[in-house]
Image (cartoon, rainbow, N blue to C red; front, side, top):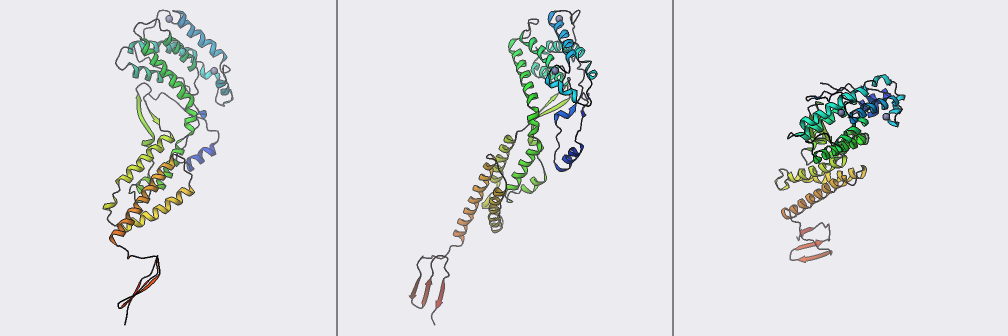
Length: 359
Ligand SMILES: [Zn+2]
Ligand SMILES: [Zn+2]
């Protein structure tokens, strides 16, 4: 369907190009994107009441409200007042809005009516809601009135008998949540994907080279881990994903660290000497890395795990060596003994032991 026709207003062209070159991902601030929305299709049989919208007080009020609000637009509220400053803005672009609200309101009522008793009523109706919300464009014009009517309809539905209260409550909850998400989109967009990319790179850098996946991990960025729970909406024809927060992402990195380390079986290392050398070097390197990089409290969890693991490895090989190559017994006192035909000179710790045969 290709519902949306986005326009991007790029004020600072240089910054945009620079971001494209220097950052792995570029995000465009929502403020600079605009589209006029689209007409929703009924996706159901439309049973318009006779004389709609002049059939009853509720429908009459939808029409009157739409006209009255549009007269004041864009001076109706702070949000819309900002539009006046945009180069592209003309009130005429939105002339269709009052008619859209009235015409498409009845589609929504009929759609709910037709689907409310079906098994998949919740998914169908909420997907249709999302489709309707999207149809009001960016920035939205007219949506707050439309949602106001939705609340009113769901709270005081005395027209329809087949619409039980618990279902209406769930739909009201869905609208509340959608509104919250819309409000928070701007904040969320700013914990943008570049931050997550930085988090990822820091983690890969900290991994010791004995983890054989490290080399491969340096080449990729696991976008699939950052987005999850795909949901396809047949009306908007879009698949939406949820994005992980930085905290959630670090949690995944901590667990991945653990599972990598679990896979290393030191008792089966082919070249024990090489492995041991690598462990010593890596444990030194990670100490340096954690001094020079700033890790959050949460990120320190995987650094700690790596440090403990490396220390255990060192201890293990140290013990192994002492079993395989036992050192001669050394006492702390310097002593010279004359035993038979040998002089044994003991110099204590770190001693050089010389054994001389008497002529
Ligand atoms: Zn009516
Ligand atoms: Zn307004």
